[in-house]
Image 1 (cartoon, rainbow, N blue to C red):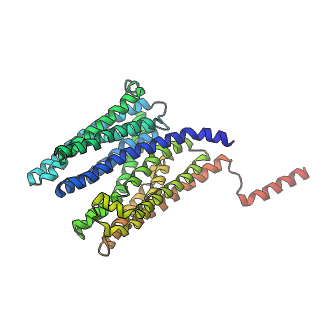
Image 2: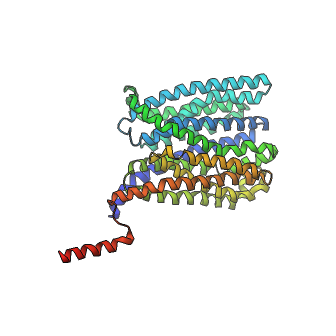
Image 3: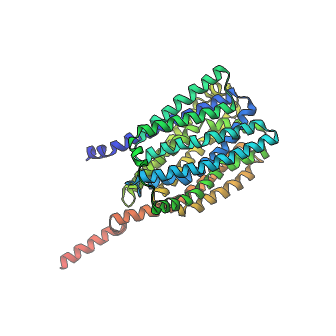
Length: 448
């Protein structure tokens, strides 16, 4: 029995390993680039890069909500057999959305240029060039996971890393590293990653040759996407509203210190969501209506708690050499807040798993108000805590809001798992009543 279970689990373990490698390579490349830019660019240019990065995250949130998230959920279930036609439609939508985003960024860049803010103009001009290619690479990687080919996603991420980091070091060696060239490099690395994934999946070209999806595909996709969009925007607000409010109470030095500490936990915020979305989501989507769904959720819950806590404890233990190596000793005095960041990352990981579970159960339309409650709570908590402590407000406020959202999501999710389990056993009596039912059956048999 155990051997059969191991044989059944082996393909999923392999896919999970490749998904983890994929995210480590991709997130590691971005993390290293951020560190290099923080050390090598002038502070004004890196500040402009950070502001533009926050705007990019908003665009990426909208892009994922409209395209990637529905693809991961529906491509692994409803459209599994017609995934090629489904992917073609998504790629066309990507082109339309990115054309609009590029135009908006160019207008914003022009506005900053006319206002005399050259670094901000350069940052948004760079976004207009790199964003379509970066999000295309994200989309192609997720298409690999939706089609259960995470190995090719890892190959694409390795290509991205091989272009991005050596390219940045080469530009710095030649004295060519600048804000604009950093965006050009991001776009080039993303093009390379998307091309490698495309050529590495021969089925992709056969898929693209099939007719465009019919209205049924679009209807199901947009039904899922419109609720995912609202949920993700609310989640973005929880993570970014405190940072937007911080300059009203604190100086840029405090903002820089907070950003430096948060960067240490970027691996957790990249790896855990990747595991949830690319491994847990397809498995849960296929397990809906069976008793496996509850077990998968419990195992995932344990993993999403252990991983950030173990990582955070290691960061705290090595905080002195880490601060020296990455930031040349800067921000070491603020390392005491790392413990709060551990708790915040653990809560965020649990929320990510619950979010994925609701997507797999097609309950995305019911979770919007939980995220809205979290967004309202973070605005209230942040404005209340900022006069007391900037770090407590920006870290503790979102953490408390995420706890509230997690509790609300769990109350929505667990009744569906209980009903699924009940349906699996044909709604047997509860444990308390099982003995009485058996005695009654024996009495009927004896009297009969």
